[in-house]
Length: 115
Image 1: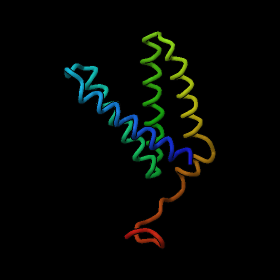
Image 2: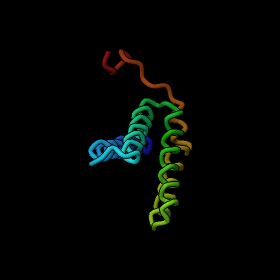
Image 3: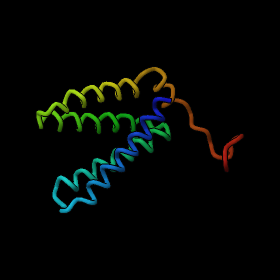
């Protein structure tokens, strides 16, 4: 359940990052970078829902990047970003999450699944 919630959170936050990047008043490097970072969050969330193990590593790298940028700004935000990074790491790498990523996804056309 935690993986599903984190996946959807990444998709929503990534979409918001893309929105901010695309609707910036100018296409500065930061705005384009924000769009790319947003797309990576969307990809991580979407592929985590498909039980792709590599996607949780992408999600962790995405949050680590946010934490590094927060540290570089030296605002009160770094502590919050590091705390969120720790929570995401735990949520994606605990035994229940391992079971989620190593379980075989249901095949289309299987009993109860659309074909």
